[in-house]
Length: 212
Image 1: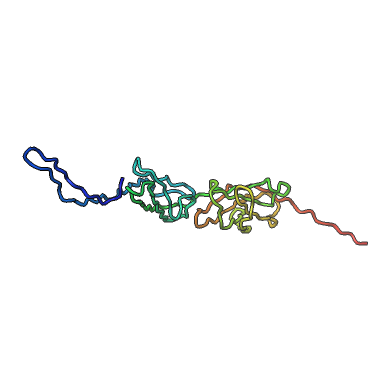
Image 2: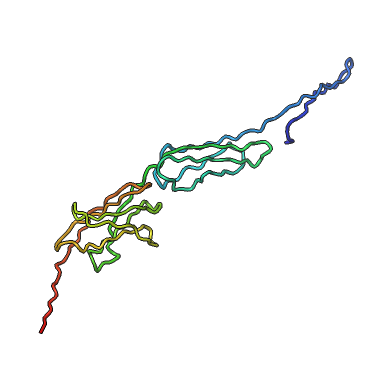
């Protein structure tokens, strides 16, 4: 299509009694159409979940851009994303924008004891904290013998799927103990508690020294 505005003239061909004639030009401006963006975003999603992608007016080609971005994870709390649709046909269509606001709820982690890291020492306690494979949790893990706090550990860097926290429970008395690990949670993750983990602390063997 030619760019607007248009000069429209009505032309009368005339007949046996009347000569032909033209009307004065009428200026006609055709405004660009604005595509419609359809974006059914849920009011709430869990941390780590993706948003559905928006759609545009059928038959109108173009591309979407997003601010600040469309890829998860989004921070827990209230988030806002703006989608901008730029049509391929900029002569007949304008760009269109749509802004959505949604709530991201905190993820529920899983806290699991891992006994394979040091099978030779049952008192070397390792736990992994996973969040459905999304993101890396921060915070701390506290180790309890029943209701007695044994100690607290930070997370250690790891090339594995989940970060680990570690505590060497050398203060346990001889006998069986039920150990639980409690993850503190962070800005995107809820706190979580492991299932009880049974360890048995052996009796120490005194050293005998014999001086002549």
